[in-house]
Image 1 (cartoon, rainbow, N blue to C red):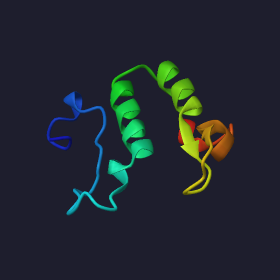
Image 2: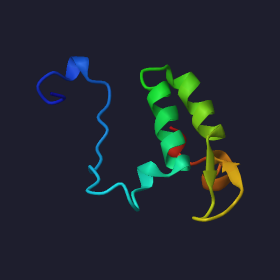
Image 3: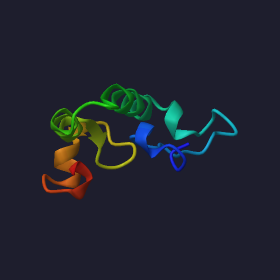
Image 4: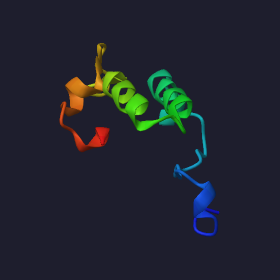
Length: 82
């Protein structure tokens, strides 16, 4: 659809469908929360998305107990925020 009707498509999310719910990242609470946040931000203006992504809680390393704002983990100047 994006190729045929680019005027109606703002973004494409690509992901693999899980074969099992076990050991699938999107079933973990942190990843699910990220997906919910990203869904909530879809279609919002960039000046709203960027600061929200900067504050999005993520782990520095897998299994780490403490969540940190993404800006602390990937850096304030990360291209991820642009």
